[in-house]
Amino acid sequence: TIYIIMITQKDIKEILKKLDYTPRDLMRKKEDAYIEYNLDNQTLSDDYLIDFMIKHPILIERPIVLTNEKAAIGRPPEKVLEIL
Image (tube, rainbow, N blue to C red; front, side, top):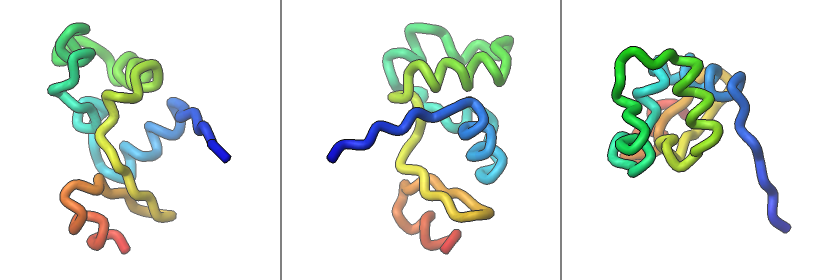
């Protein structure tokens, strides 16, 4: 069985809040799309960046581990232990 889960703007905002990140903090800055679309442009709004991540999920740092109250990026893996 294959499950496809679509991430929403609300999901990303909740993750950002748990991580205490800005949208750009959650993005893979070395991905071609980040560079090609000039996403380092500081005039871009948070909502624009979040919408862009939804359309191009390859830009989202991962894995992301979530608990009810916390989140951690799983790199390095020891970061996950901090929230468990």
